Amino acid sequence: MKAIINWFIAPYKTVRSEFQLFLHLKNQETTSKEEKMRITQLQLVNIMLLVIYSVFFVAFFVYIGLLFVAGWYALSGIIVGLIMMSLIRVMQKRYLKRRDAFIKNDPTIIES
Image 1 (cartoon, rainbow, N blue to C red):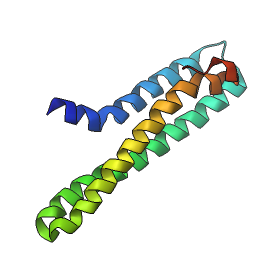
Image 2 (cartoon, one colour; image 1 turned 45 degrees about the vertical axis):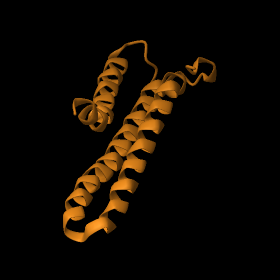
Image 3 (cartoon, rainbow, N blue to C red; image 1 turned 60 degrees about the horizontal axis):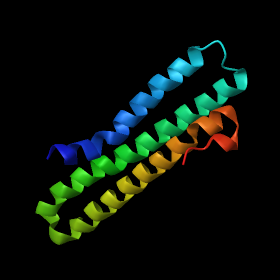
């Protein structure tokens, strides 16, 4: 049960750690103005992903409630919610591999 709960809240933990990293990077004196602008853009992307994930997260539980009221028709909403949350998690993992390269504007440092 704990693994299931962790699966649902992992994107929130990732965004929280990203914001802590971004705050640290912005406060460094060696960070240029262009890098700070890219960090701000990444913060907006993280907020956008979190909002979209939250919409599907809430809809997932609403459709679980509707499953008891509307019957099997609500199962399609549950399936779509799980698929979309999975896609957002995959996007987030791919984004993490390219984050540092985007900040430094250097495509050679993309992690494998």
